[in-house]
Image (tube, rainbow, N blue to C red; front, side, top):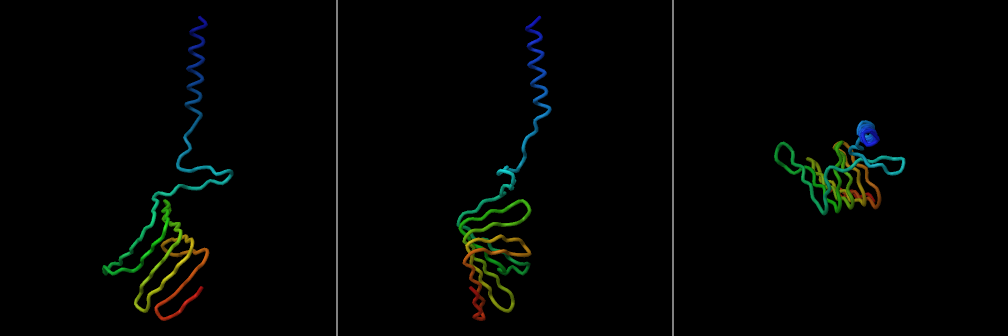
Length: 120
């Protein structure tokens, strides 16, 4: 009789654990702050953006790059080259947060254009 009671108790405890515990998902807890995981990791890379006329529009290169699920990039030792109809722009920095609409650069920023404009 006590063996049946023991087996039922073990089964009930396992059932309660199975029902109440849920998996964590795609986030890692870092203390009280949670950060998301990158979808893609790059090392010593170069990304080339080609427009609809098959012309090179943007070249992004860096030593380490991370692409996140919301479309943003985190790039270390970034060099960005952008070409439009008037001039060519170059941007170098230690760290950059890049989105399709904007770029935020941090540390040793150098901006230059083909019309001899240089900002450091």
